Amino acid sequence: MSKRAAENDDGPLKAGHRPDPMHMDMDVDTAGAGSDKEMGEFEDEFEDEFESEDEIFEAGVDGRPDAEREADMDLDTPAPAGAGGGTASGPSAFIVGRSKLEPGQTLAPDPSTYHMLHNLSTPWPCLSFDIIPDALGDNRKVYPATMYTVSGTQAEGARSHENALMVMKFAGLSRMDRGGGGDSDSDDDDDDADEDADPILESKSIPLASTTNRIRAHQTPAAGLTTGPATTLVATMTESSHVYIHDITPHLASFDTPGVIVSDKQNRPLSTIRAHKAEGYALDWSPLSPAGRLATGDNDGLIYITSRTDGGGWVTDTRPLTGHTGSVEEIQWSPSEDKVFSSASSDGTIRIWDVRSKSRKAMITMQISNADVNVMSWSRQRSNLLASGDDDGVWGVWDLRSWKPNAADKPTPVASFDYHKEQITSVEWHPTDDSIVAVAAGDNTVTLWDLAVELDDEESKDTAGVQDVPPQLLFVHYHEQAKEVHWHPQIPGTLVATGQEFSIFKTISV
Image (cartoon, rainbow, N blue to C red; front, side, top):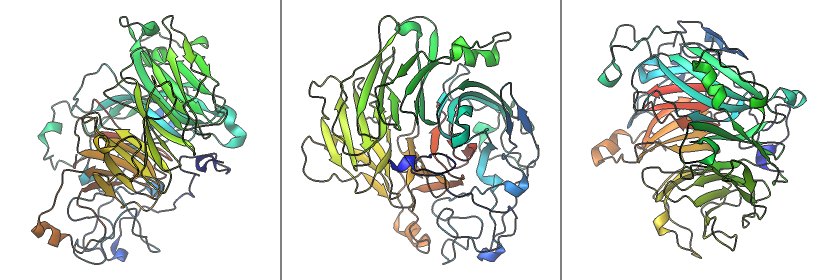
């Protein structure tokens, strides 16, 4: 049984199982941890309730009532700060995700470290989601913000019939109310910015008979042609081992076009891929294949390629790509070559494939870890760079130019970080900055990293008292059961993370 299919009452979650809920009362008093700096409580000023046509969600400016609110912490290079921490040079520095809370100690988010922060709950937790590019423009800095996403649910075993593919619109995402204190970042001080806007969540649900393990969206011209109106396709890999392809274009249109009603027929999949005999978690669309080319990998170590035909149908090559001796955990297509992709596996390897190869074998195989390699991200800015994360909590960056076929030696990473002490569950490069990376881990955190940071000797002295905190670590965001994180490609610096709930945030660090 795959580590991600561990049996429990709540159903499978990425990297094994759903952790026990963390019980943390959100008081402001953190003095018990030896802090010399009291941290203010993040107030829920709006107490909003969001209603949609299909579901009712609970969310607020930070997404939860005070009694349930969790902690979000900033770690500014070089000195970490926040709840329960001493000074950077003191032995009692509190590090979110690493330090343990003592009885009576609590954490609260620091609103001064965020431009925007919203948490929201869905009827069931979502293991995977994707952000849908929209027509609202690139490089958006106006608040309140709007975005579109798609996700799949993880209903409890006895209620698996309630699972759904959820198409969502988040609107009215306001920036932080700083109490008239102003904002030092003029980029976000737009005349249209409105801290008092009420967030709005709308959703459309497409019934699914199984838990969603991985979901990815792809925008393509209609019917596989190079011209014509764009359509948004979604591929969903489920616990049942089936992969479903849906066209969610009408669902997205229904949010913004009065009178558009989604029919039962439009909820049906365009295609169902039944090639896999075991469930899987690896799935990705080729960004350079406009018609649509999909790679899917399963727990048996097999990878299948599905392509769209000239007539708009779908065909799966029944000859699998073989070589992995463990489950295929992640697939990423090359951002620069439309027939090349990489795969990561629980066998500790990353493999590079060319779908044109007659051998059906990988071009390059690299043993990069002694643990399961859970996740990968191929840099969109520098296609020779690949980031990976493993089950031991180590994540690193690799230069593919140094990888050679049949190489006997283990490659040396460009950078490697052993900061997280739980499994890495997601890693993603910033869409426009080739030095910034977001990482999610099983220690209930999403961390932001700047690989360009290097400390001089004087700065190194200032951080000498903080053990095992790399200077490249920019920010730590507390997120319960963090599973997947994505940058929004059109709203600079904005991230969305999923786990026990969704978190939408933008920090002052990026």
